[in-house]
Structure formats: C-alpha cells, structure tokens
Image 1 (tube, rainbow, N blue to C red):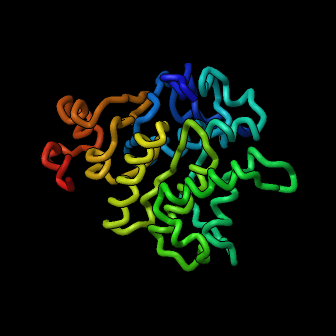
Image 2 (image 1 turned 180 degrees about the horizontal axis):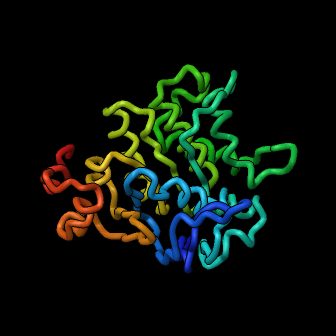
Length: 257
C-alpha cells in the first residue's frame, strides 16, 4: 500500500461484450495518487458508470489493463482483488434485521475463512471503520432504521473495514439531501487524508466536487482529463464540456467553506 501510483490504466478500452461489441471509451491512460480524493464528472451517457464498474473489476475491459500497485486486477483471484479495491454502489440494499455493525463486518470477507470467523484484528478493523465515520454509538441499531445519510456512512465504513488502498464509489450522494451531500463529501475528503487512501467517486454535484476534490476526472468523448479544480476552472474545459458558458464557475468553488 506504499506505492505512489496505487491505480493506473494502460490503453484501457471500456464497453460491453456480447453479440455485438460496444465500445464506450478508450484507449484511456491515466494514474491516480495515494491519499487523494478524485471526482469523476461528465455529461450523462458519457460512460462514467461503465468506467467505475470496469475500474472496480465488475466489468471486464474490452482492451488494455488496470493496474493496482503494479498488478493487473483481472489476473487476480476475486478474494485477492478485494484486498486492493473496495466498492460502494448506488443500489439501495435490503438489510432485513441486520445491525449497523453486522453490515460493516461484511467488509472483512477477504480476510476470513468460509465460516466467517473474525479475529481480534478483524474486530479492530471494524471498530476503527465505525469510529472513522462517527457511527460507534449507532453500531447496534438496525441498518434499515437509519437515515439515508447514515446508511451511506455505514456503506463507507464497510468499505473501510475491507482495508484496501483504493476505494471506489458510484454516485455516493445520489439519494441524499443537500446537507448530507455536504457531509458525505467532507467525510470522503477527510478519509482520503487520514487513511492515506485513493478515493474515486462519480457524481453530478459539480459545486460540491469543485469544493472537496483534490482532483477532478473529466470524461469526454474518447478522452479523460485529470486536473485540479482550479486548473479546470482556469482552462475553461468544464464550462465547455457542460455548456455552462453563462455561469461563473470560480464563484461556485469554496462557497460552502
């Protein structure tokens, strides 16, 4: 976990295989740094979700490689891959009578045996994850009784308990109100720094992402640019990509701080 480039792509082509091969984007060549929060943006239909699913190992690439600390993720067994990448999806889960702590415990699956016996190290990782998202006082509550904001915190804690260098989230604020969008992105920013993780998420909240992200990943036709929010504002790429010529983007950034 000490590599300065925990995640990199080489000539990555993304899309779908079937009766007809559908290429969405590529070749994409980029790398991301440890201890940073990356926000993936782009117009609807450009391929953000496809890229997220491919980077996380859910969807095989049409070509090229995805490297985690120098290893091709698709050459790894599922359990080994799960020690490098944790994933939080937008799908709402039906947790039944599971408690907060029981959900977070599931993040330890790559490290346990088939009986899911937890060691003291596993329990420590679970408690650290709960503390990191400020949910220790709610660990015995039923997951389904929580607010949407706290449910998202639980899913992030589950990913933290998985103890991976890379954490990927697909639109983590999509079901949240304005206040909780702010809270979740502020939390992700803090976790990237305090846990020295690469955190990458997709989203549509441009003003929040300009405020909290260390780097933005702007997805365009067959191209992906990575720059700081300030660099994107100065270059005018975001206003052009989203057709925002009438908006004053510099006044969006930091308006919440």
